[in-house]
Image (cartoon, rainbow, N blue to C red; front, side, top):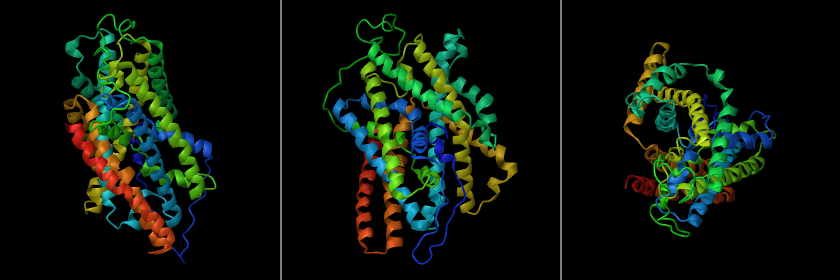
Amino acid sequence: RRTLPFAHLHDNSAIVAPQIRGGAEESIAEGKASILSSVFNLVNNVAGAGILTLASGMSPGTGWVPAMMICAILGALSGHCFAIVGEACELTGEEDFKGLWRRTIGENTYVVDAIIATMCLACAIIYSGILGDVFTPLLAQTGLPAQWNRRSSNIIVITMSLLLPLSLIKDLSALAFTSIMGFMAIMYTVFFIIVRFFDGSYELPSGKFLQDGLIAAMPSFERTSLWNFDFTSLILASNLGLAYIAHYNAPNFYRSLKNTNAKRFRFMVNIAFTVLVVLYTATMASGYGTFGDVCEGNILLNYHPNDILSTLGRLATGFSILFGFPLVACGARESIIGVASSLGNNALGSEKNHSLLVAGILAFVTVISCTVQDVSLVVGLTGAALGSFIVYICPPLIFAKAVTLVKGPGSPESKRAQLNLVLIPFGLLIALLGCISVLK
């Protein structure tokens, strides 16, 4: 699996709806993955380019302690919601998210396809924008004249020459080798961000990369505080709403775990999300500790163009995103076809419409990514709205319905499951206030 955000959402497998017989659910096929390999795969699946936005979420003024608490609390809640999706699979015998939706919510599975399509399109816009942000300064370092090296024109050229051919590929198994490369790219980026925080290269006033005035903005810490928590803190919550998303893939992880059951699955999930909290906190704190209030939506843009560690980080991130884009485009394409099919239009998924649909998706993505200069806006809005729905609203709703369906209304298990529904107003609040805060 890819390591970049939403890459896990391309899985649009067929709905499996086993019949419940005598109150017992059909067993799900036995998995082969150990807890250790499942932890690695889940961290690999979740941690991605969204990690580059966390420092900018802190920069409007959230204090150090609240920022770390937000990261930890949202990580714990996200992990809990991920785990209860697995429990719902155990109760119902379903093997994918659409199957869970159909069994617990209703037949309108086009809603799931519409959500996945929207998220994949948003992710594709983020990827496209980051590719422009990454390769424009790299091309400048090669001596390419400024009039031939503009962000928008670079995005168009990359889209036409690389993204379109890659996105037209139907069998994406040829790109499977890039999974470990993508994970290593993200880990390297985290490593160099932490190194630059500790080595003083950007430390005021004498840091070696602050002397020639070539960085985007000098570090500033006027809004830095230990305890400040206000309305702007919701920007960080919105970014984290995107960074922790993997919940559509929870049934796949549950199914693939060896000797799977709800208790064993939750144990694996707790370990993985603890690792993610540590990883995110370290990256957020190091990025903000280096640049403070001037952190860009893509933290890589803050570093000096001649910083070799940063240059390697840009290259690694750029190529990782480049090969991750076809998976996101595939997710958008298949989900749009799913929505159209549910609404009675089966022709959209025909072979003759494949190239036209892919070209239309990339044209839409390219226009927006060329227009939106700061990808943190897209990250924030997507994380606040859809991220909140997928992480905090949908899993508790599905779980509570699944328990009631299997154990019966009014049962002790059903009553306990209903407690998870308190996360629904929390998710709605985070979504609403997060969107307002991002747009302010």
